[in-house]
Image (cartoon, rainbow over all chains, first blue to last red; front, side):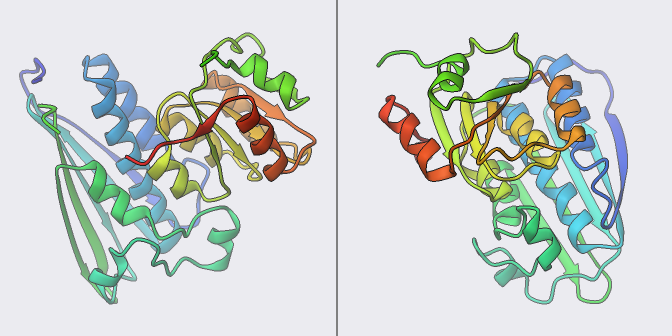
Length: 148
Length: 119
């Protein structure tokens, strides 16, 4: 299903490393917005899961980052950009169960090594670019035409 | 199979209800017992119940995101105040059971509930 909007709806959230206070806020607000737009519950759920995992990754691993979203009549694009430390081996990081999460994050129940695979699983297009020492950019597209 | 609601679950698990006591007649279809949040986000289906030892607010966030209808904290672990506040906002009932994760899961399995099927 496509939705009826005339122009792209955009928004952004700032994420600070180690600050869990607003963790999940981007996901919650995006969920609310897509519900207002009348999208399928299944699509909204996939967006919320992918966004939440992305937010948490920045908070656990990076110093700071941004999450930006763009809603068109056909799809939602989420771009998450952080300021490092970047990922040495992307292929390894994409493997289910592989995690470099620090002990404090594991104690909170994170670090199962499912974050990146889960983002990929819930999006229709998933791109990750990273330069070790610089930062990581993730782009996810979720189509509103629910043909999965 | 007989329908199982959060109210039934609270009785079976001898649980105290710490938020949203008006929202207990929701049907639960699956149960997920874990202390790993990403497993919740990866495996849980809508209309699930989460049994966990984690008590911080991200558990409620994860529940909201994954479509989980209720959370059971094991071994009398009391959730943080922030966790309770967020759960009230999201209308997610929180239950505290004296049983450990294994026993709580076993009791619900005996009542006819199973884990989330693999997608």
